[in-house]
Length: 202
Image 1 (cartoon, rainbow, N blue to C red):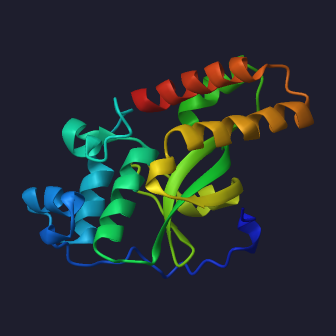
Image 2 (cartoon, rainbow, N blue to C red):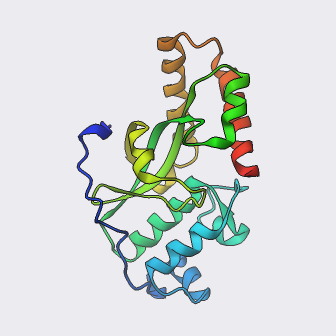
């Protein structure tokens, strides 16, 4: 687990770029079939896809099949692509941040309704030499986002499903207890689901 305040970030760093070789694996072949031949183009393609939950996040090709994705499936796909092409600088990260009305305007009304200043939300993104790279496509300002980070850990693409949910719920349980939040975990999770729906509608 890393404390984001101790991470040195070089704002000049950008996403690494490399040629995608179709012989390297099924993710690489899928991009080549779309006439996408380098990582920079792949990132742009992923970022432009609709923000929408996928039916089966365990399917490594689900983003291609459904032409949509979330922070989890989009960044897991790009991480798998970089791994196939032996690009070792990219890390897939699970961060918990304060989702509030400033960084997520779409949930302002819901937070007001439930009298919450913020909800700790789990978000997946990439780090390249410690710089955050976000291709979710919902207008995340990475500089402001990093200021709202509470904690983060590095994960592998297979951990975007059950592991992510459990990690998030464990954090929320502690947060509810420590801050005397007047909701149960199930109630707070339902509020969080409403927030995600509001974001998707935007």
